[in-house]
Length: 110
Image (cartoon, rainbow, N blue to C red; front, side, top):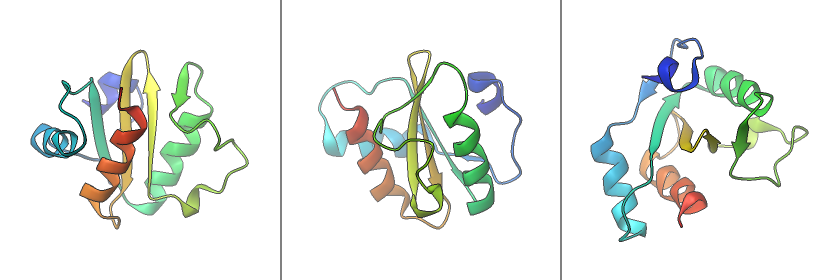
């Protein structure tokens, strides 16, 4: 699924988050239908690789415009990007998945 959505190579630690978990997190913050969103967890190394890559991908929009290329992504537990109308949430594997999902989903809540 990951390489279809973004046409990027699969990284070794890529682990998709189930729709059930995403929907559960969304229902805690909104009563509206969930937007098109995918979420993935990565180990620290792959998380940094993919975030750095996405920050420089044409057409990729970060939901946190205030975090520019100069921001140190080592201090971040999760990031959300939008690509062609689809939201992609990236979470470090050592972070609290539910807390990060709820926080990131609030970034795209509309």
